[in-house]
Length: 401
Image 1 (cartoon, rainbow, N blue to C red):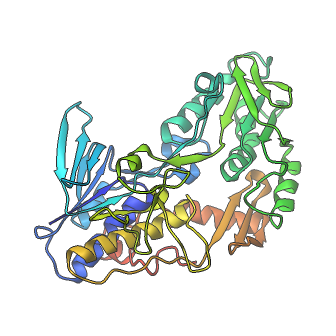
Image 2: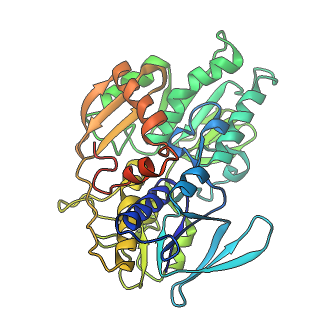
């Protein structure tokens, strides 16, 4: 038997760990049940941290962990999935192709930044969506120091006032100061289509966020969107033109395109609709988790967000349940009633909320310490020791805050 997991993000990593955990508990050998993880590199990109400087350091190796728990790593990119023949076609880095059959499949292909067809965005926009994107932005920012301080060189525009946009913008004053020097007159502007900053965060946390932006000198343009970009800067729907050499696009994400190959229903974000056990209805043997899946967290109408917090726990349930089916064991309904947010606010600290109502619990430097622990400890892979790694993947305990 073979379980195939596509993707080595947070959901894929925990799907592999959890599947190996149940296999071990049941005393099944790796030869009797192969667990194979397909990804371009055996590396976890710590995506929630890509707004930080030195993004090239924000990865964690997975090969030792996978070897410790007897999970087969298959290098390559899954190009096609045939759910009728239960085959995955993989493109290797060398340009060749190979196929991998599966008895159960877990789709954890993550998400991609949504880039609308705005004139100039592809040519002049940056992002912190992927490791390559974040490295390109960091290189660009450092390269600005060699240019004359004219034509908006010291101005950064962040398109999108949601979670990612706020973290990128509030980190930027310190990053620019490190590059240009303490006397540089830098300017950071968030452009948000809605009439309020952090539209999805609600009214409770907003005053904390607004206060942080004020302290950092980060400006906002609310109720306006980006209509075009060019070498001279960015033009807004309000008619304003802002001179800048740096526009960071942070306005929404969509599920990775591979989900479209699964013959099933998807939501407006491209996520596969799954049942409570994270199985794709009507498609035999296919599960989905993380940003690839739209899953109910509870019986109260709350659904998992496209976040690391939900991806890790969903992955643990999906890996467990796919393995349970293969071994003739009962599956476990995914549930995640606890929900917190921890928003980095740069040198202004951080904001920690609890519950779907986002009740503010901690702010400032105390919240910043929690954010640092989340970003540098909690979301990283477990140690490459078999017992420790397997113990970390109990579906009922992953991210149980």
